[in-house]
Length: 502
Image 1 (cartoon, rainbow, N blue to C red):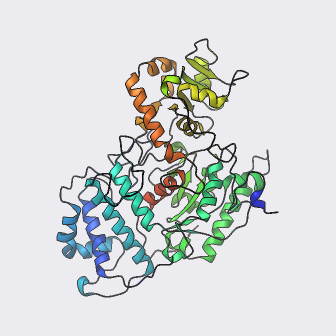
Image 2: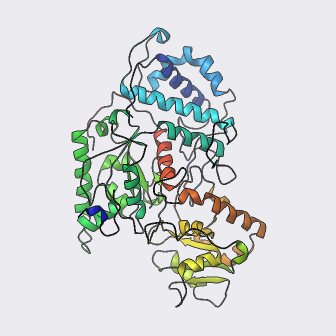
Image 3: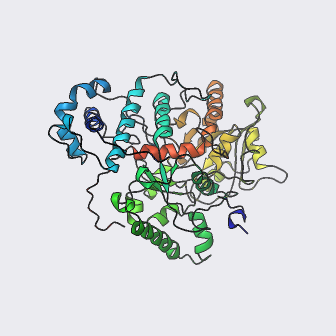
C-alpha cells in the first residue's frame, strides 16, 4: 500500500548560463546607489525598518520595500548616470571583483553571479514599479491586487509577477516518507502536507540546483512528532537529532548549504514545536528562512528573515465546506468565541465575558449542546482569535473564510502575509488590557467601518485559501511570495569561508 494515502496524509526547464556581460553587474552597482540614498537598509524588501512596517500584532510585520525614499532621482536615471563611475565600489561591496575597464570586459561569470544578476534585475523592476498603477496593460488575469488591504498594491503586483517569471526552488530528494516528502492534510497543521505536496508538482520547482534561487528542506515537524517522538516522554532529543542529521546529510552530499551557510534554504513547519526543532541546527535558525505558523517574536521569530504562514484546519482535507456565510444583515451575534482555556489570554477573556447572559456576547469554553462552531461563526459579526499556549491558531483563517471580522488578541504575533497586507483594514487588533472593554470597543466601531472591514476580509480571503492544484495568489503562492521577498534581501558570493557550517 502506498503510505501517502494512509491516515489523512497527503500524496504526493533548464536555462542556459551563457555569458555574463558587465551590464548585469552595472545593475547591481546602480541598485546599491539607489538604496544608499534611502534611509532604509540595503535591499530590505521584507523589513521592520520600512515605512510599511508593523503589519503584525505586538510589533511584528514586514514590508515589501521602501516606497518613501529620501532619494528623489528616478531609478532609471541612477542606472544611466552612475554606473560607470561607481562600478568598482559597488561591485566590491557585494563580493564581485569588477574589472577596471568593466565596459570592455567579456569575462564569464559564475553560475551564482548569473543567478544574482537576475535577482538584481528583479529588485530594479520592483522598485521601478512603485510609481505604476496596480493594473498593467499586459495583465490578462481576472485578479489584480488593489485597495487599502494592501500596503502597496502596485509593488506587490510587480513583485508577484517577478516571482512568477523568475523563482526556481530546488527540493532536496533525500529522505523517505513519512517524515520527509510527506505531511498531514486533514489536520490543524494541514499546511505542512499541503505545501510539501504542492511544491512537488509546482512549476516553481527545478531539478537543476544550479538555477535555484531557493532550496527547500522537505521535512514535516508534525510527522517528526508522530513518528520519532516518544509520546509523553518530554524528550525532544530524538526529533532534534533527526533534523540535525538530515541537514548534515544535505551538507555532505551537496555544496549549496555550505555555500551560503543555509541562507538560501528554507523549512516550513506549522506544528508548535517547529521553532524549537530548528534550534537543533544553528545555521537553520540563524541563517535559513523559517516559514512558521508559530510566528512569535518573543520566541526568536525574526520578521525580516522568517516567514509567518497561516494555520489552516481542514477537517475534510478541503476548504469546500468552509467558504462563505450570510451578509452582515444576517449576522445577529456581535462577537463569538469558543475554545479551551489554555495560555494566559483565554482565561482573562472567559473571566470577563464567559457564559454571560448577554446575547450579543457569545463566549464559551465549550459550546452549548446543539450549537455548531462554524454556524456560530457565520452568525457573528466579529470572531475572537486569542493566543493559546502559542500565538497561532486556525481561527483567523476560519473567520475570513466565513465572513466574520477577526478580532486578534495576541502578543508578539506576526500576522501571515503582513509584509504585503494591511491587517488593520480587515481585522480588529486588541491587546490583553482591552479585554474588559471588549463590547464597548466593538460597539463603538461605526457601521460603515464594520461593513468596509467585512467586505475587505472577503476580498483578501483568497490569499488564505487552499486549492488543489494551487491558484494564483492563494495560500501556497502567498507563502512562496513571502519567502521570495526574504531571498531578495541578500546577495550570495562565491568566496564564502566554509568553517563551522552547521
